[in-house]
Image (cartoon, rainbow, N blue to C red):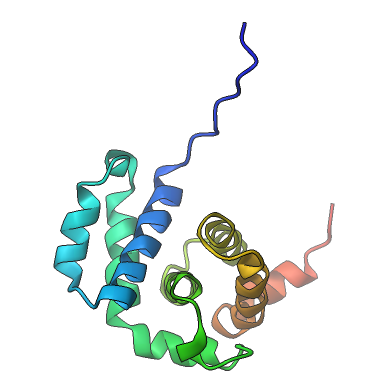
Amino acid sequence: MDNTTEAPRKSGRRLAREFAVQGIYQWLVSGNDMPAIDAHLSEEDGFTKVDRKLFRTLLNGASDNAEALRVHFAAHLDRPVGELSPVEHAILLVATFELAHQIETPYRVVINEAIELAKDFGGADGHKFVNGVLDKLAPQLRAVEVEAARLRPRR
């Protein structure tokens, strides 16, 4: 028996979020169109395990609704949107879209996934920044769910 440990496998949904953030990042940095970005990402290693429906929903939803999504999270930033790192910007666009439009995914899952993406791809404290913004945004976009979670007794 060897002492190496295998990295935990990522779910298709986690991979969908990773690839969506990568696509939004490319879109923000390069200005390429979404069909080209989608085609490029679809050829990447590991894409075969992606939840493709969620990937395309997040990628297209975040890009198509970017201005409205920025309005949602801009009030909770400590700097102008234009000063966000492209990684934080991409994560916030994808997570805000998911909070606003994918209500079947619990808000805590959306926030936790965004934090993990910021840890994997962002700067040293990017995950703290993303967490702070989304924690303030969730009660606006998911008021009933957040309040129910607040009132639920802890085990």
